[in-house]
Image (cartoon, rainbow, N blue to C red):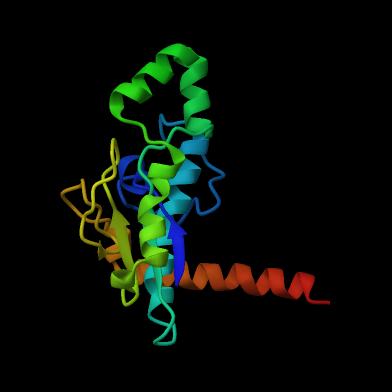
Length: 181
């Protein structure tokens, strides 16, 4: 079983749509801090790549993505808010919103990795709510997010899935030729 840590931010920040002209995050395109855009874009690209990769695996190998939700960590987004609003206010707001401990955030990933019921799942997304105590939700097709009405347009678009797959393959081949000497 391959378990990938995903994020709902691919929907929240970039609305489930890749930017083919900004695949490396070199352009600033939004009011969000650029690190947030790049992180969200990378998580969306990861979901798209996993969707395609899941179809290439042998029958006894699976790959799925889980979202830990809002976890109290030291990621850049939290640090940026702390600079703007102060650490005490951000800590209080995170607590009020139901930020999770790292252990709570990891629960869906451990479930995917170890539960007998998850053994046959492949190419799915597991999201046990964004905030508060994790609550089991049935795994869904990659591209859907439990708390969003519409799916990710890019993840559901076969041509965009192929674009990401080919783009990744080009990077892989470039790196392989560079370092396989």
